[in-house]
Length: 239
Image 1 (tube, rainbow, N blue to C red):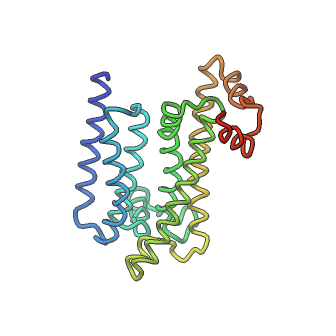
Image 2 (image 1 turned 45 degrees about the vertical axis):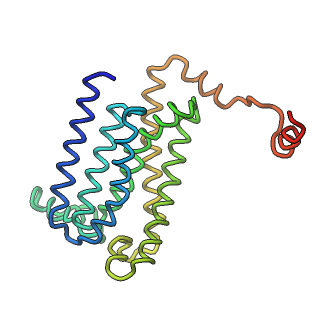
């Protein structure tokens, strides 16, 4: 691997470690901060373990870094209490909620949107380099995985809220009284993923001469014989 790539990845790792430590100091709700960072720790450990065998591109590492940094801001303050209105009022004289006509704290919505926007591209790398998908599937499968993991996360939130209950469960769930909160979060993650894959497809189309042929080939039927019971019979007969 190029030395420049190693240095770039190491720089991002050091920067994120600094952000993590800084925002771990006196969070608003320590228990919620710990709960919010369980998946972060698992993700960072996975990235470190897989670095030698599967180093991501600098683009992917940057997108992952940005998403994790935003998440750390949310976990420090607790998502429903991130004071972005105070920040915008101090800088521009008006709160963002006043300008947009919002009533609830929307920082959690931003994170769900950026999950799709920032993580779909690294997932595309995984599908292209491990599953060797091409054409249409190289854009659809990362989007599909983004949408499904967003749904799984909502189930994790619900399970944690049921399990812990009380103030911690409510802080982690963060619905802020919106009964459609989970649905809106999944929708925003999906929109972010669609935008990410649309941008990626547009860039590739402008630079890749066989873009159309690759899409067409990816949608061509490769195995004309039906599977299911036919395949079971073939395997039973030693085919």
